[in-house]
Length: 74
Image 1 (tube, rainbow, N blue to C red):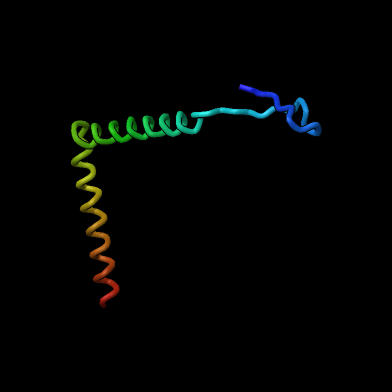
Image 2: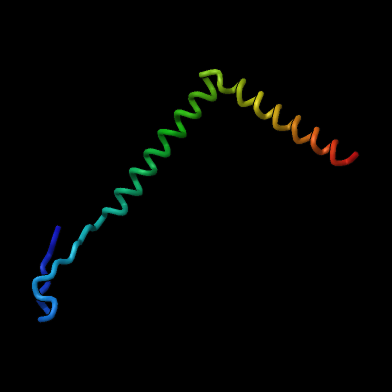
């Protein structure tokens, strides 16, 4: 939406853009997108066999950290 402003002679006919609520709408769309991605990740992790993979990943990371800490102590 454009509104013309003619109160001041030097800016007569200039346009000012007014978009009330645009930032709120963009924020809401980003939140909805993030929620959809989070739900997909949760669904994959619980039903799609991701739980075992996440557990294996955590075990591998933990064993690597512990083996490196043992190497540093020696």
